[in-house]
Image 1 (cartoon, rainbow, N blue to C red):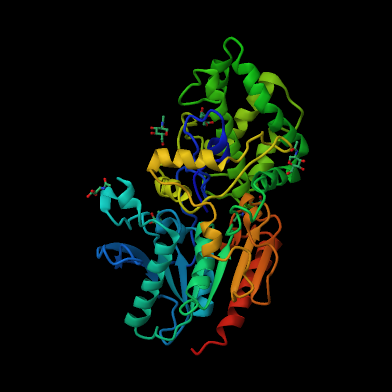
Image 2 (cartoon, rainbow, N blue to C red):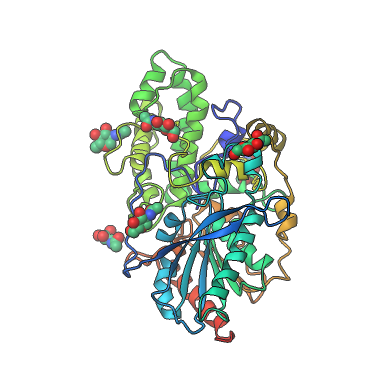
Length: 487
Ligand SMILES: *[C@@H]1O[C@H](CO)[C@@H](O)[C@H](O)[C@H]1NC(C)=O
Ligand SMILES: *[C@@H]1O[C@H](CO)[C@@H](O)[C@H](O)[C@H]1NC(C)=O
Ligand SMILES: *[C@@H]1O[C@H](CO)[C@@H](O)[C@H](O)[C@H]1NC(C)=O
Ligand SMILES: *[C@@H]1O[C@H](CO)[C@@H](O)[C@H](O)[C@H]1NC(C)=O
Ligand SMILES: *[C@@H]1O[C@H](CO)[C@@H](O)[C@H](O)[C@H]1NC(C)=O
Ligand SMILES: *[C@@H]1O[C@H](CO)[C@@H](O)[C@H](O)[C@H]1NC(C)=O
């Protein structure tokens, strides 16, 4: 999913107004209003809170906090039917629940119990209440390992305390960072997790596993599939912005053309403004869905096609920037209700937990990203030392560059079983995903013309044949796995 638009450009840019913001799995909800797509099957859930241990891996801190989780038993076979367990990611669990219609769509067929567990430090699951983000000692328990241990404790609790659940096989589901957690949940706790569906989970977006340019190259390719001229215009626009910004009245022209809430006041604002645009192109690729949706912003079907309709002819100078402002208008103002474009919005006010992900990117989630000017981006190098120094200045912690690979086995997944890795190939994050099957039971599903975990969304009349096929394959694999279970 993920999250805020916090890009490598800002992370690595020479002059960032907000230095080294990490790229999060979901872009920021700049100004977008979250409206829920109806799930279509009259779904309802009950909210519960579980007394969760703050520290699973030490004994000095015996404290607990309330972890939120949502349960729907309306479809469940109370006599050992399977449990579909969503491993929450970096945000409000309701938001992920509302955007994971696939689980609701297949639950009646499997007669499954649905559980959506919130990730610690997000939504309402705050270990130290309003002081959760106050200092580094309170943040100390925000790790993927602690989150997986929470999920494991919760699964145990549900199985022990729900009549009929003791022998229920548990399948982990997740998208984006939640997909990474679903896969890692199966890897770390195979004793309680029977299998996992990890959608758009970039588990290999880490140091040494994927070239740092892959993410932006994939993004460029997604746009190139729609229009080469469009990409050439975008490529041209960076220099055009710099040239116009340096001319008399140029900054005013840019600010008023793009209807910016905060005007550009100096040529040093151009660098972060370029990064803002680059982030937007990534977002477009993440949500290039075949129907109108409002996952991160309210947009029409195939939004890249619409964006490129404004950039269909080779353009220059002010005409190019004017056309580009129609693209920002599309992304930020499709509803027509946006007064101005808040290009300095960091997403911290949306349902997604910007702060938490920022911290996670400064500790475990080190995802190297770089780009050159061969596609629709510009030159940005990856500088781990700089990222580390910036993290230290923000949180007094330094990232561990290779920890995730050691902890979760990197590419050595031959000893693993029963995981589906699905990836939409339009999605920039597919660059760090598992695109080829590793064995008969660690199965990769590629979805051509699919964006960020499209397969986890509820069915739609305008779904492509590819995503319908992917969902069918996923359902068949789950059926196949589950019939071997003692129900
Ligand atoms: C999720 O959907 C429910 C039902 O439509 C709605 O009441 C709730 O506000 C939504 N929550 C979020 C965080 O989007
Ligand atoms: C962090 O904040 C808590 C209050 O929530 C306080 O008890 C603790 O001493 C603080 N730790 C540091 C290192 O400042
Ligand atoms: C499917 O696409 C058609 C044609 O663009 C459109 O009229 C219709 O509203 C779309 N349906 C959905 C469910 O998005
Ligand atoms: C958003 O769209 C409305 C209606 O077209 C327009 O009046 C308004 O100026 C637009 N806002 C921005 C920021 O472009
Ligand atoms: C822009 O976003 C920032 C950070 O999210 C917020 O504090 C600010 O109020 C927003 N500005 C406008 C004009 O909406
Ligand atoms: C830029 O990146 C592309 C794709 O990764 C690569 O083929 C090309 O050689 C690179 N160009 C330069 C000048 O580094």
